[in-house]
Amino acid sequence: MNKIVISVLIAAVMTLSGCCGKRSADCTAECNEQSEAEENMIENVSPEDLAGICKAMDMYVNAAVEGDSKVARSAFADGATISHAEDGKLICLPIQALFDYYDATGKQPASYKVAECSVAGDVAMIRIESVFGDAEFSDMFALVKDGDDWKIVSKIFQAK
Image (cartoon, helix red, strand yellow):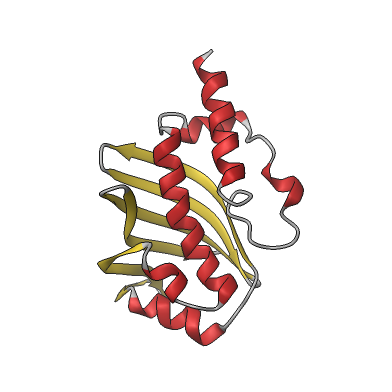
């Protein structure tokens, strides 16, 4: 019974959070129920926490859709970082590098789908699969609850 209630709540939250984060015209049918495997990856997350975390993810993706870093700024904590490996070397940058990317590339289609989410009190980890223009990524975020909002403190990504 609990699993059914959680499944319905997750599906509702994902639908309300902007078609699973999709911000392109082709998102209509892609926000149906998640598979059982996907539900298991987020079943211990309250609907309120998932909605708050997805709100931050929506701002992150919508900044690319709008081509405007201002859309994402409130999703990130001051001092947030962005990291990845390039040619086998770790690259760690202040989040301003992501904001510069948004402003330099302009508007582009972008979307995401939640792959995993875990919450422990006021901290969370989420992995999304995202598409920005023609590029696909696995993105991982560390978030901390700040009052009623979830703030991204770290973004780590892998280009596919």
